[in-house]
Length: 149
Image 1 (spheres, helix red, strand yellow):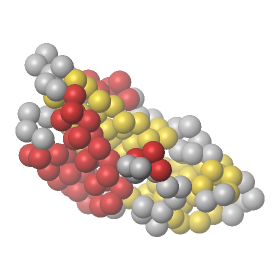
Image 2 (cartoon, one colour):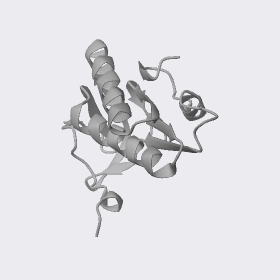
Image 3 (tube, rainbow, N blue to C red):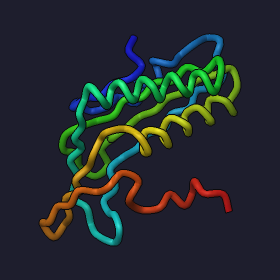
């Protein structure tokens, strides 16, 4: 079963989790990224994700392989969506499983952080005022909940 995918179809989060299922793993973590209805103080009505799909898939495979190397015994999977998405739709799902929860959490976090940093996928936001703008990778509302205080 393929563990990395770039798709124009809606993402089935449970299906991504199934890709990492194992009777020997007591912990499974699922990260689901969804389209927000706002960014940078502006209302967002949707966005377009576009990618050089072959390159993006190769990079996603590398990121998953790195996570499995860093967190031995971990199974990981990720699916990233392309196309036009509305607020609330899933743009990415990352699943990780391991015998223990810490490695599952660490692997999932590693994958999503590397995807945000390295994956050649670009987004163009559609604002409520009718304008559209390409958003640089890593730019947007801060993930304050991810920053230790």
